Length: 354
Image 1 (cartoon, rainbow, N blue to C red):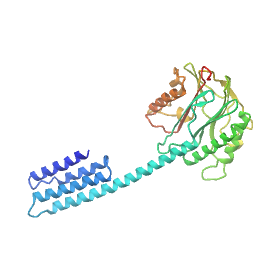
Image 2: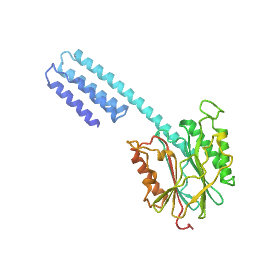
Image 3: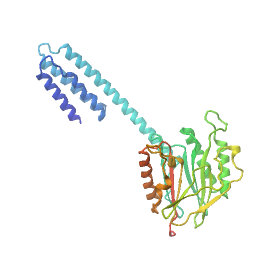
Image 4: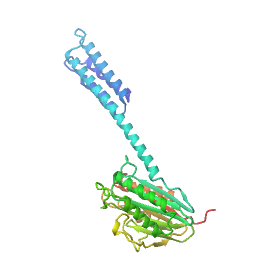
């Protein structure tokens, strides 16, 4: 690319010397340094700009050796110096901003690994795969959340979505995850665990702009207790999209018979939570997700049809299933999501592990 710019400078200079004196091609030299920032840094731009100035000076000397340089050539040289200097300054500032952006992305990714680390591939006898897709590429973290904790008899999981965006949503998600990790092993029943989480959210959430005031801030969540042995999964749904069980390529949406309000609504919360249950047999896949998956739209405004897209899928490995699902979701939206999306796929092996 640099050689092309140098060849352009040489060609313009040679032609400018050979054409009649009333024709001036010097202004074409500015194209070389002007295009160089597309692929080069400050040093490359400065080099091309210096070569353009040298070329314009040589043209002036060769075309008018008696006067050395005419006023026209001096004006063109001054313009090249001004443009070249401005482009070098622009490239320096651009590189500085690029380094700052890279540092911000690094910090956000580190924060996500601390607040929302990927789930392990094995949770007892269960195979697990998790995916977090941030709507903002620069942020890599938002208000969607998930976590898992092992108990003596099984695995407890939570997947949720904080209302709102920005750092306030990240703070609320981190607070709920901390409460879940502490209480998941201590609370005997699933209802007691969710009641504890609701109290933690009510005491920790504040309406933006009004500390200590409960308003429109809340968290939708689904909390599950999956036994290690074959059995029914217990679930409490707090205003969150229902899980989907994929059995032999046929998806079944698990709607809660007794749904609870979202966490953090204070006086609206139920004092006693009703536990729902459903089958999760060996060979099944259990899908947990946030509304960023089901509300993802294509160019025509059509929502992502989750059940339709997974119908007929027979993969038993959660990681392979989730990888294909990720590609399908991004293809549906054209590569960019408008909202954060979380998807967790859990598989119960058809044969027990040693």
